[in-house]
Image 1 (cartoon, rainbow, N blue to C red):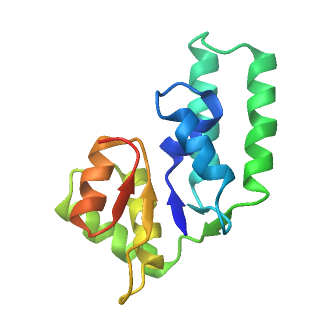
Image 2: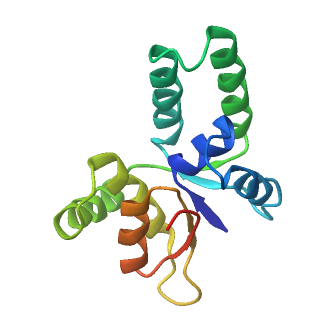
Length: 144
């Protein structure tokens, strides 16, 4: 099972990063449903809308991307932002230089990580977030 940060989902949708093809392949070959934070869909829409405002995407491209996002969202499993995730996010913000949204992403993944057994794979292209994920004992896929 892999937990997908919004940066990886955005990369798959927009095909901007060199890793986009590899991430798309990973996403398509998932044996189980991809797992994401409850905030992921809105973070992805934010990234798409920002590119539209900057003139990097036209309205037709945006609509096509939103349809793709809806298709992905129909198959992924979301981790709700409940008390346990919020507690983890609060701790992460005190020990890692993360933004609130990134702390929620990482906390959502950590909330699913079993105490025993192999760590969950964390798929992200955010280098700072990846560093924090590694320090928390996760296996990171993508980025540095």
